[in-house]
Image (tube, rainbow, N blue to C red; front, side, top):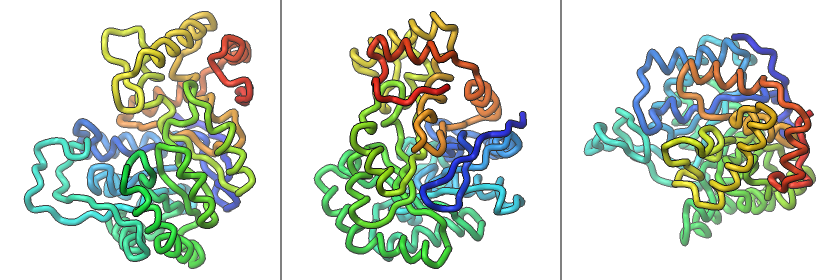
Length: 343
């Protein structure tokens, strides 16, 4: 399935990314094992479809996702893809690792453990280690992974200070040396993106789940600051970790932000599904397409765990949705009145 995806710029850089990207957490065996053959078939399906943005991280399968993504991209012309990976975690060999059980949510055979390090030396080592695991000579976007209070709690100030006083210098040096083209964060929260812009120049923020059919808070604060700063958004988690893909009218437990969805969220999704039924729109298609109506969003990158999922996601991405659907959501108070609508 070949699609001519629109390309959008990342920040003020020369990078042009497809509006649909590939989130590669599943390539690290997120929650369940994926065979090497299936992983390569999945990545090849994305490449052949015209997707050019691939996002991975050391955390995803403790290095497994990076290895698989690198294997898929290695024979391509480097100009034909944009690769982002993360810094902020160092992987170290762990001889006691129980590779038969989930670790950090991944069913991975990789015998490593991870620890946080946002210092200059930590980020430089993370970058070099990623090049080795990928087996590639270039990384386009380096994203500081999981910085912020939601991840670090009472250690947040400690780790943020590491980035502010030490780690950012490494990112700037890598960018100035043209070893990377863009600097950003890869996080699940908005506030830390705003705080980071006071440290230095960031080109993009990979923001998971915070701008979706269910959440539009960034419209009032983060997005205006990004526009002034010159940063764009790569939107991860467009399904809010599940509920906007599954809906609520099924026998299982709807998931929101990696936990069972609270009552108010379930009720809101149920109302959105009623509008979907009225206009014969697939909920997941609306969830994928909505964020891209905002010009600050460069790409939407759902997790893609199988060749079938790649093809189905492209179908959802290309589904025609009437403007009346979006207008009805706004009229009913289910979308912010300030949210740009797909047309």
